[in-house]
Image (cartoon, rainbow, N blue to C red; front, side, top):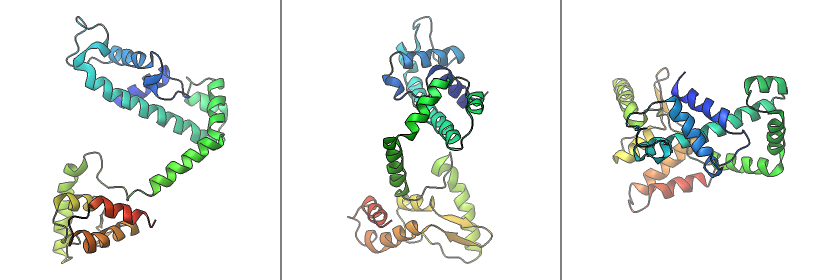
Length: 227
């Protein structure tokens, strides 16, 4: 099994699906790290000097990063089960897919999911997320992983005599940020973006380029306030 699946298994066999803030639960962090280091041997680990992995300085970065992953795994686990609840899947099926969940835990999760304050908080977060500028199309390797793709796309649109839509943006940081939210349609031979990004670029051209004292972030917030 891959690394990510193993961490998910450790989390689900150790934590309760109704848990919150793993680091604040007594002994939870140590239990998770203990199981992790029993399952994997990390370079630099010296069990002859440090019996417990959380006491070893060389393991600190690994432990911190893994705890973030465990927290994300807990959130993902809850989301999956809540989706099953929303679909009215029977307890028998949910338990078959999640054997570490007891019927009592399931009832508690279901009750918490239906509470008005939980719903209100969820809707608030969705509204805030909707106000974000459009997500990028970088993938897991980020800007470095996309630059060779962009170079090929740029060569293609140049070969068709299509002007560079980002010619005005000479600042590398601005150009990369915008390019990551552009899409090149190889069939229609056009660049496209959503309405928020179009308005964002319009304001960049008329406001930021002539007046560099106005921040990139302030324009982003101005655009989002209208959506």
